[in-house]
Length: 297
Ligand code: GDP
Ligand code: ZN
Image (cartoon, rainbow, N blue to C red; front, top):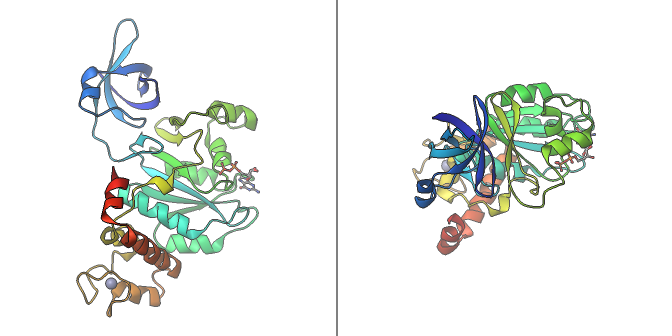
């Protein structure tokens, strides 16, 4: 019996990275019967026969999992943003930060294209909210080592609007990145696949990045909305104020004596983050019960 992590899944075959190397496995029949079909990112117990064929016996408990792409146990979502060509709307970052918080992943903000625009405003907002913010330039290499350091020992996935530099940063992170870009792209499998599958790409001995050829990134639109009462807990900078509002069930919108709003007025919480909270709250409140159920299934 060995433990490992599924790095690739294709037509019922799972490639498992173990300490002794890669083993291609099928899932034991019982796994499929009880509905736990393995996902890329799953930690599994597997065995290898004399003929080299492998079998997954057990899927260990998941920390989290996503539907599109179908991937489990993401430790960190890396949101790549830029303040020029294209300009990232902070609301998009806030939506992803809420999804990350809800799934128990760390959010890392990578502010890219700093050779063109230092994006100080974005850095300020998200540092203040308590996130790790790494200014990077895939062009000059600035910040790439800091990012690599921060990803050590983690399984991460990249997201962010198209054109911000996700592929360029991934290419920089890949070991031996002195390869010409085209070759690295081939290695990453970009541009060749039309099917929507996900693979874990090894960054170093125990760090992985989920690479999703065929996806722009995580499909945020399709992710389940967060119930409005839950949202406040997914804004980590609200935490010191929760419980200090005049009303116990304060929604932090218009109620008198709201401690969260007090912190916004005092400048401890960024207005832009607070505006996103209000917008997400309204979006969630507008969902009918049946829509909520549908999206959650
Ligand atoms: P993706 O859609 O997020 O994967 O973005 P790409 O990695 O394909 O990058 C989009 C464009 O931006 C490409 O032309 C890159 O060369 C360029 N680019 C990416 N990162 C940087 C950067 O840090 N600085 C500059 N000046 N250009 C960049
Ligand atoms: Zn309040």
